[in-house]
Amino acid sequence: MTVRCAACGRTADWPRPELGCACGTVLRLAVASHEADETDGTDEGPAAAGEAGGGTSADGHPSLTPSHIPLPRTAPTPRPAFRPLPVRSAGDAVTTAALYLRWLGYEDVREAGPDEERPPSGTRLAALGVLAQVEPAVRDTSLRDVECAWLTAMAHSATCVCFALCDFTPAARDRADELDVALFRIDLSGTPEPLNGAADELAATGA
Image (tube, rainbow, N blue to C red; front, side):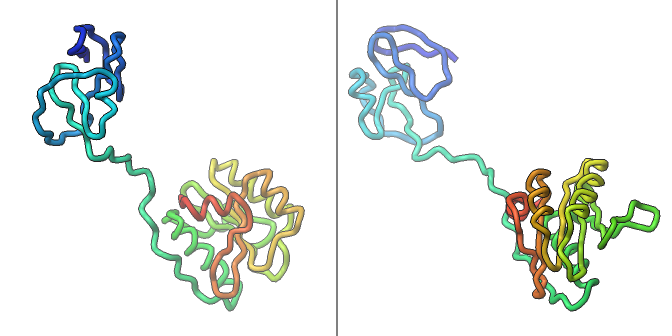
């Protein structure tokens, strides 16, 4: 919109939080409704605009100064804490990985069926937007395991996640960082522990 300077009569376009007129007067416009006491409506120049809670609008009436400007809500709704289940077997490790994926927001988690591509080792879980490799054996997950999981995830345009009951080899960790694969280690209490930046980000933001 266009407003007129009460001091010199010039007009200029809005919106912007402050408008400096060529005559030196600072024009201000309210951005939120707030009742203000009536004043004499006189704009005394730049110094008047600097007074706390004051200022004159372009038409000579007192400006309506908001108490605050609310910020948009960008933070996601907090998730409840993950409830771990003790891991006593390989099947418990796979169950924990599935529960954790659902906690992250992937609700349709299922185990890969016999007619689907099987991993070279461990178990593969899938859901809309994610593919997870779970190694429940007491051995370090290898570079080959991580790369195979990543290639399959890329073929389905899905996020790749790897869970291990033991750990990952140094080569597997390095490759996962290069490919942005989230690595989690499942401890015996049933809590997946993020092991790299991709896992930290996924745990923080969810699906």
